[in-house]
Length: 447
Image (cartoon, rainbow, N blue to C red; front, top):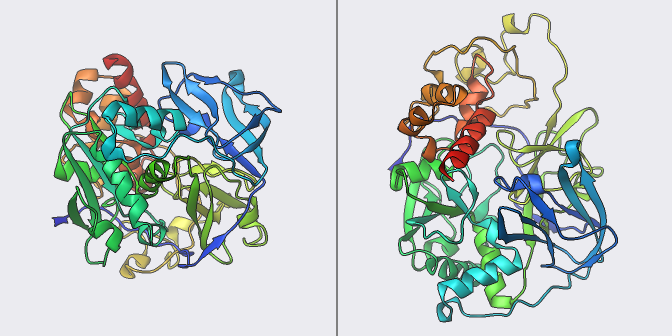
């Protein structure tokens, strides 16, 4: 049992009902921007080319063995580029057949570590395994000291992994067996304390269970690593999430890249928030059609703290199992700071709403203030449950002091660990983007 005291739960309206609906989509997309660390993706397909599930779409020029493959069968209908011809999306029109390349079913216990890695690389499931430090796709040449699987998500409106994993014990255990071949260390499963976890998690073999109690970010894998097996310079830890373990397990059970994914549609602007069974990279248009309120809305792939803004015709990101819809928040308030704020969320005691700790809010994207000098006021420390000085680390990154960044724990953090400090920051500092810049700098320096 691990007790986390620092943090903050943000209760939002629109939690997804525990019902799952199967939904189809005619368009899917893989987005190179989802894969942090792939700076130079090399395209392998052209418009009009037919693909199957598992057909390589692009690879990392710096690590050519890491391939991103198609989640569906059909025809490549669009290659979307941005400024300076940056590759943004590879759009595929699905034929709804899901014909897959056969990678061969196998018992992971009968394979060597090299054979397992080769199968995962060729099929396209390897990018589901990420590493700390840097939070990038794991290097298959490394051998991690441990593997972490966070079985719960404490972010606002997060998906229920117990529901997602229901009745999938065989595939999940097979995924665990695969991962156990990749490390000589432990596989850590983190469960939410004070709630009855799924039997799939509790009955897993070859893992070490940890029960985490506390507010968000208790579900962040970085916080769990910090409390269970901290990263020192030179250490490598791999991590992934339950639905990704399922995909890996199905690859070895079925011999095919099964891209099924259960996604929660949530948020105050959703008329009927619930779960959808779809596939990786699906377009959200059928999910939100006639199911959202009128007005200007913000569609987010992921949660409101760390997710990515997409269009109402956009695509779910590779690592996300949640789509959130909230008001856009492009309105202005006259003397808003002087009003009682009964309907406003407050992390401090600025508004009287702080008296209702469990009240659910309809929040928009307004930042409620402007950028100003970076003031040290110890607010970050109240919601940052790691043994790190967050403000000092941010400032070390801003001045690009490599030695100071190392001494202040840059190897242990990720953008998501600074999402709450960014929310409550009185200076409106974009802490997450600064941390990512620091991680990229450290990776370049140490490579």
